[in-house]
Length: 280
Image (cartoon, rainbow, N blue to C red; front, side, top):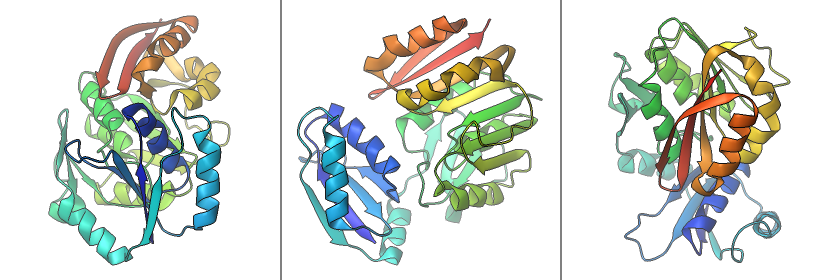
């Protein structure tokens, strides 16, 4: 395994770099605490060709604010990394949910979600995940159908089931999510959730429309599937969209209004924004 440290120049650049690292196939991405004098991101890769990585970084950095961040790369032992992750992971409170490591308990109630460190975005630590979990608590999902676009490791889908959803279907384009999402379903005893790998055009949706669509995806990804989303929602259905930067608020709201949605909530956390809307 390889650990890559990237010394970013600003909070704005940090957001771009973090999203790129996940899309580039990083096993994990972590941000050094604000008290640290270096604004640093650390990414772990299962395997990495350093020259290829640097080339990909330089190409991606053309679209970021500032210059490409300096990097350092070192080897790490896989078992040491997993042990360190366990030792440093702290339970997360998000809305009604407690997100805990699977080694710390059992998913025996409606408020505990067990998580496991794997090669995919989705341990509940990111602001966008917490924003969605907190808002989901305000919705009545009893007996409802939920669609999770870009489900990652399945945390939001599992949360929807715990809030009473009758059926949850989620999908993600990242094949690295497959093993981790299925593991999460097993350790959380999820029986009403189905998760698949593929795009919106690839997967076989079990129903033509849903009461709630979750879209914890970046704005550029949201825009590629946006024309199809209104048709996926039942009349009066809800859309929760996160993964949007605060400075993208006007663009995202314009998309909602163009498709006839009524926006009723926007909430920010850090640099990220959640938009909640209802189909008229």
